Image (cartoon, rainbow, N blue to C red; front, side, top):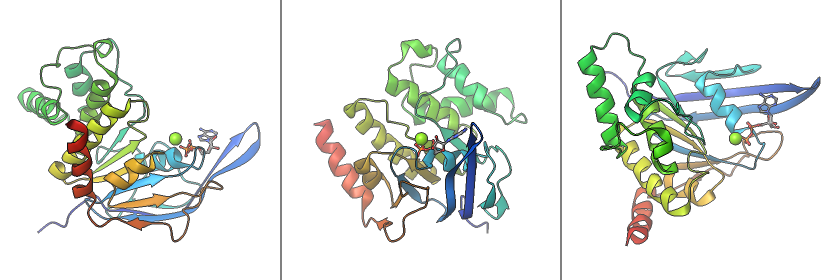
Length: 243
Ligand code: ADP
Ligand code: MG
């Protein structure tokens, strides 16, 4: 029997940047563990290091000290076992939805038919069926973000990292996508780390809300909140909005 995957262990992680020779402590001794399949929301004021933490987990930056471990293996660079979604969808404007998602598909060993099936499945999963051949400029902000989520999921990552994915969307679209994200999470059974500055969103979606203190990027002690029935509460709210 294989144990569930998608466990994240962050211990004592420090990250410094230099701005014009002045050192800036972006993360100071961050520690956090996330269980396989857990949905963790991370909130905190602008500049507290949320995006830096996700970029470290994505393998796009290296920590100065401390360890970031996924399923027992140290994170040392980008990998298909983690998907990343940014605030802006970052689609290639000259490619269609299907082409953008296919480009994200990195598994070279798949046959053409398998690739096509994988992409189609993920287009369905995010509710973009019928828009396969649309170009990004023909999509609404919400649809473009759906395409970006499909691209992040198409390699079947065990962890999805979301950096304020709905921050640029209007309230109704945001609520719809929050519901979709929750459905995808339940369907795929993957670990989710959602960075947001919307506390409602964090509480609605997260099994656990982690609060990062403003400076210098420490996870505040004693402010993690366990949420008893996040799914039920989110569904209630979405039903009301859809009516
Ligand atoms: P958040 O996402 O919580 O708003 P960030 O992780 O983007 O915060 O940034 C944390 C701190 O690190 C900020 O002070 C920011 O200016 C700084 N920072 C982030 N990325 C870089 C970089 N590549 N070079 C220099 N400073 C950076
Ligand atoms: Mg950020």
